[in-house]
Amino acid sequence: MLFFTALLLAAATVQAHYTFPRLVINGVAETKDWTATRRTKNADTKQGIENPTATDIRCYQSANAGAISTVPAGATINYISTQQINHPGPTQYYLAKVPAGASVTSWDGSGAVWFKIKTTMPTVDSNKQMTWPGQNEYKTVNATIPAGTPSGDYLLRVEHIALHLAMQANKAQFYLACSQITITGGGSGSPAPLAAFPGAYKSTDPGILVNLGSIQPSAYQPPGPAVWSG
Ligand SMILES: *[C@@H]1O[C@H](CO)[C@@H](O)[C@H](O)[C@H]1NC(C)=O
Ligand SMILES: [Cu+2]
Image (cartoon, rainbow, N blue to C red; front, side, top):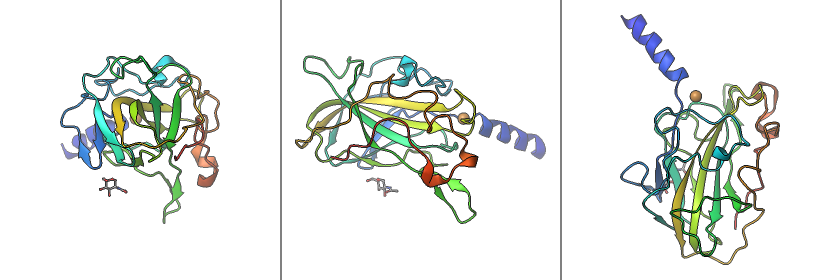
């Protein structure tokens, strides 16, 4: 019986994909799933996206959200994860300003509008194993909304790229979500460079088609544009 339980647990671990249904702002999580965060197509299956050039790479959404979260510029944000983020790989955050005349509750985030505000790099632990910030936690790593970000409505996109099978083409797995937010108390920065989703990533990018067993941690190249830190 014990053995059987252990097998089941092992199987569950292999299947442990995840979604990010709640935004956390300065340590305070949204009280319900998918309120200001757009429900994703994998809300039930938890399956990641394997094609980084599909439209789903933008927000993977099955619906817009009803609410808008207020986020002060300079705030610390992260997401609750439904399961343990057990796979190796980077966490990245992007923002896209809602164009004049559009609404954050319905805008689709298309076009070259996304700037990156955070990425993560692996390190080597005392056992000489490569480890990633936030790996094995039930929440994504923290990011700061740059103080210089202009006030206004934005889509906030979180992404974790699982690289355990990424030595094969189109086997990196993208777990992501977008939240509808209003940034308050912002600055007068000019966020850049801007990228489109799809468009920012190719299946052959060195941070997407990569054998983690054959690179130095410091040589990892996160996909997408450079980070804008305001
Ligand atoms: C992440 O942010 C929260 C809320 O501000 C803070 O309590 C926590 O210490 C931060 N974690 C890390 C690892 O910096
Ligand atoms: Cu998985």
